[in-house]
Image 1 (cartoon, helix red, strand yellow):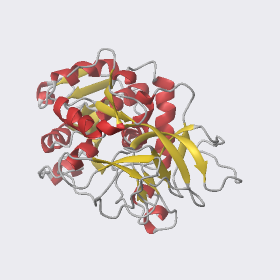
Image 2 (tube, rainbow, N blue to C red):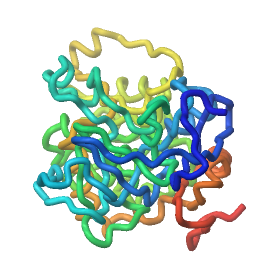
Image 3 (cartoon, rainbow, N blue to C red):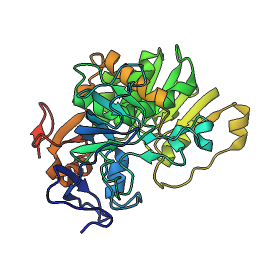
Image 4 (tube, rainbow, N blue to C red):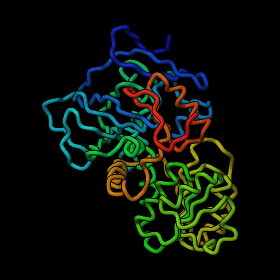
Length: 377
């Protein structure tokens, strides 16, 4: 029996629970909670598996267990804890039962020192979806379940009509994180940007900086398949790691967005940043080794090295608006290779790890489905 989870034979909700054993999930029937004051209950429509989910189930990232993983979630509002009060999303849209929504990865209190500093993603009393220990009423806080209970302080965005799950699910993690990584760079018109790592974050970063007017978007990844995708997402040049050494834009790099987590990529980004350049580090979320930095180079070139982890609510709103405006300009619809049913969640993880797909998804109500053009096993 799972530690800390109250099981029931009569509950209509299911959850794929990770109990700490590498590669294993247990499908359990759990109570479907009634939302309290400030809370919402949503029916999960779909959840894509993020790289951090893969790190967790492979044992490379430690979390409190048991837990329900998954934080790139789209849900449909099922119940409000305060049904008589008006509910608005981040853009001022009225929320109603049946609306499809995405929500911020961290529900923040608004009162702790981190929140007062404008860092709600680091809230000291926050609820982090897909990362919480499944105990008491906090069992259904991840996307690998039929339902999810949203805590008070959760920032919500109502989805535009017709936005597909394949496009919308990553908004709550990958797309919003990229928005947070790009924002501090300021105006990008005419600038040269390098993106290190061409998974979902990297491809999204290429598209986002291209739409903001970057003149040169250099996409870097060791995988030929991933490099081949990048031009469709706005890259003007694609390189293997180390390729900047001989590129004619090598010393004109205004912004580097590093999403691979590779120490070698971090070093390459710093080595080629121009005067006043920015190096925004996003991918280093698991131990991977240290990087040597020449402080004189940082000082004389007026470089800014910035860490980006998760995002603030405004970035989630920016992410949804970006995806809505650009969903036909870039092939985001093609980035989820396959959907699995909830009871096949372990197989979904195995496929994501084996194939190195950009994204694999889980939908509670749908069986295994291979999308047109996707790989078959």
